[in-house]
Structure formats: C-alpha cells, structure tokens
Image (cartoon, rainbow over all chains, first blue to last red; front, side, top):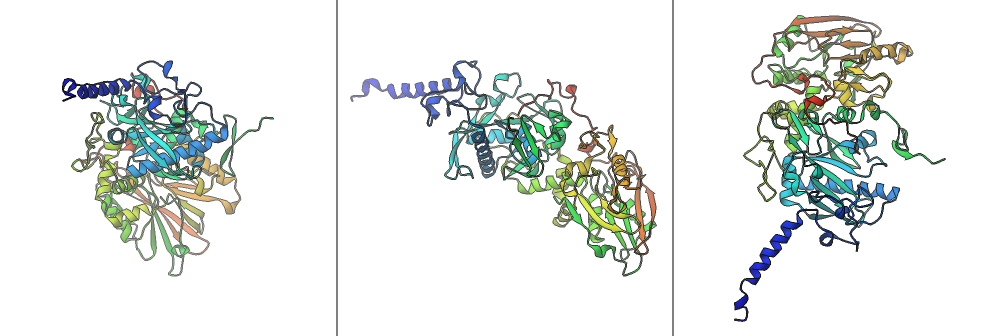
Length: 272
Length: 315
C-alpha cells in the first residue's frame, strides 16, 4: 500500500536508463564504465567532435586514454602489440570469425611474420558478415588471454562502433568499425569491415576509403603471424606495392631500423 | 602448399632403355587436345614421363578429366595460378566455421540486434570474388584435390643429360634467390622483374623475367646453370631460349597445345623436339565467368573506383 502512490516510479527509472544508454552511444563506452587502473580519463573526448565515436588518448593517437595515462616505452610497445595480435587471432579463430591482416601489419608479415617494431598499432579486415556477427553477439565483451608475454593472462575488450552500419566513407569521423583493446596498456587493433561496392561488381571498399578488387583479397591464404595462424589476402604482394610502392618490399632500412637478413629481424639503429 | 619438391632420381633412370620427358604447358581442361597431342607424339607410359607445368584446370571444357588423366598416368605437375586459387577455395570450403556464403540455407547471417546486414555476400554473382574457383572446388573429388594440392610450386627435376640442372615452374623465377625463399605468388604469376629491386610482377611492361634469367645463367659457371620449363605466358607463345622454355601456346583460346620433349638416350646426351596440335576456341564456353586472370594487370588507378585513391600510407 505504501507504494501505491508511486507505481510509476519503476517505469520512469527504466525509461530513464534507456534514455541514458541511448545518449551514451554518442561516444565510445565512457571512462567510468570501463576503467580498470586509471583514476583519471586521458581520452581526447573533450576535444573531439561530438559525432566521433572513438576518443584516442590525448598523448598518443594509437593508445586508448581510458586505460593508460602515459606513452609506452619502445620495448613495452612491442611486447604489448605482440600479445594483442596473438590474443586477437586466437579469439577470432575460437569465435569462427573470418579476419585477415592488412596495411602496415601485412607489411610486417611480408618481412618476417612479425609486427614491425616502429608500428604502434595493428590493422585488420573482417568481412561484413563477420562484422555483423561480432556486433550482434560480442560487442563490449572482455576476453582473458594468456600469451608468452602475459603468462598469467590479460584482458582484452572488443568494442564495436555502432556507426559501422553506416558504411559511407563520408562519415569520416568514424572510419574504424571496431577495436580490440588491451585494457592494461591501451594499445589496440583497428578493425574495418570490407563491403562490396554498389554498382561496381568485383570491387570492395572500406569505410576508411580504401578500395580493393575482390579477387585481390579472396580466396584468403593461410599463413603464420606472431606465431599464430593468420589469414592474408590472396594477392598480398601487389596490395603492398600499390599501397607502399615497389621499393618497400626490398628496402632494408626504414624508420631508424635496419633489416638483418640473417636473423630475419628489424633492429633499431644505434644513435651514434 | 608445397614450395619445392625434388624429383626422385629413379624417374630419370635409363635402366629400361631411352627415356622421354614430355613437358606440356597450360592444358586448361582441354582433355581432347591433350589426348590427340599425346597420340601424335606416340606417348607410351612405360618409357615416357609427363610433366605438366601448371594450369591443368579452369577455363576449358573438361578440367576433371584432365586431372583424372594426370592421376592415372602419374604425371608430375607444378602449381599454377589456377590450381592455387582453386585449392585455396577448396580449403576454405572445407574449413568454414561461421558463415558459408555459398550455402544460404545454412547460415546466411546471424539474426540479432547488430543492425541490418547492409552488405550480404550471399548472391552468387561474385561472392568473395572467386565464385568460379569455388564452383569447381566444390565438385572436386578427394583424389583430385589431393593430387592438385600435392603439386609443388617449384619442381626440381635434377640433372638431365645434355640439358643440365632442370626446373619446372608455372610462371617464372627470379635468378639468384634460393628456391625455398622465392615468393610463391611470384613464381605462379610473374611476367616481369623490376631490375632495381628484383621484385617480380604481373606487369607485362617491365623486363621479362626470362631475359634476366638467361643473362644470369650465362655468366654462371657451367655446372651451376639451371634451365626452367614453364607455361603461363600465352601472349608470347612458344619461347625456347637456352635456359628457359616457355610452353603456353594458348590452347584454350583456340591456339595450340604444345609438348616439349626431351629424349634421353645415354647418360650424356639427349635430344629435344616440340609437338603441337591445334585447339578449339573455348572462350565462349557457357557458364564461364570472368576469372581473376582475365582482368588486365593494372596497378590500381584512381578512376577505377571513383574514390580518393589508395596511396595513403598508414601503419
């Protein structure tokens, strides 16, 4: 009898929660809801345009400011990216989600099946079907993965940009469809869905305005990357040449590093 | 995918008299022509060893029959760009986990709250750009698939009397790079080699790879020279150079099917001859779509997609 006068209150609360949730979709999951160790949000949310979903950190464009408040050391960046890649590949294989590496990450594969040490992020593609599947069932899921560099396991979050459903490159503030984020170091993988180009049979595109011939991407090849099974695009060498030029496939000095063909590794030039 | 296979030396044994190696280029499913060619060459499977230099399948009328013939005759083979696509499609079909684009009835797309599926790959006009490969791959028997999967990218035939060290590949090789370390995609597709970087390419405009190959061999010590037998290059047709033998004479497009034959009489000597038969033009075959190879080589032009270009460097 006590609640008789306020029967509408629970309903109002439900409505309010819904409204709040809808409002929050304006940006990535906010700091308070996903923070782990940080007490202060270092994401660039305040300065970013309202329509932009992802808010990279204020100090590095390839770090997530919700999870870290400082830049990573050279060695830490490498080990964190390796674990990030390994965890992503294993998890996607477990989920049965088709994905392949692209851009600078594919270039790393070309040289020695590893991420290049000067790279600060990882790029992968998924098919539109896979993106739909991930968005439907795995958005905001956290996966604990053990890797060589993190034997006790580390948490990774799969976050989908709800604006992925608008695949027009004109939405240029939201060209990344999803991210696989290391919740401890803030490094992440950019995931972009590949769509078929309307009215251009045989062509495909990503929201970041990269264009491909379907037959250059498919059928995918099986290989190994960072000691994990990986898929790579069919015509990998030509894709790399188109994007980075012919010389990039053989140039052994780049970005302050030299490729040692005996050890098959990129080593940092000493400052002398 | 097998990168390199070395021939069993018994295949070159002269125990039972003279031995003949018969190399045949891109058969492309032209079974009738293959049978006619071998009849004219008086093929005898007890003394003759067949070596197919890739692209046995696709485009033509009877790919499965050609593969069955190859199995029956214990023909050696190398992996051509068409076998490559087909076998990748075959693996993919047999390893599918979530979405099978070709079997709509099973799992087209998971239903759910993730928004409308804006870009279904389900229609058969061009799913994954490899519909033709998938169609054939689906029809492969296990035996045919295992035969094709076992074709190496490079077949090292070994020392052939009178010729020297002999290799078979589908498209070409870059001189001076170990066979194990060559890019397989290049070996199955190359037409030219960039002289500055030695990176192989499908670009027909650069220096033909075999020019570089022949020049390189001629300055090597005699014992270290190698001859490559290949196919792939129907535009140039029969190309018999000292250290490279190109055999694709465009059979499936109404050209010829050519066999290059080596008769080994003694441990030191062999004789060469070529045989050709005329082929029907199968370009108008029903059900044949435009394959990847039919696309002209073009390093992505801006107007091809109407977008802003792909020259962006991101890493």
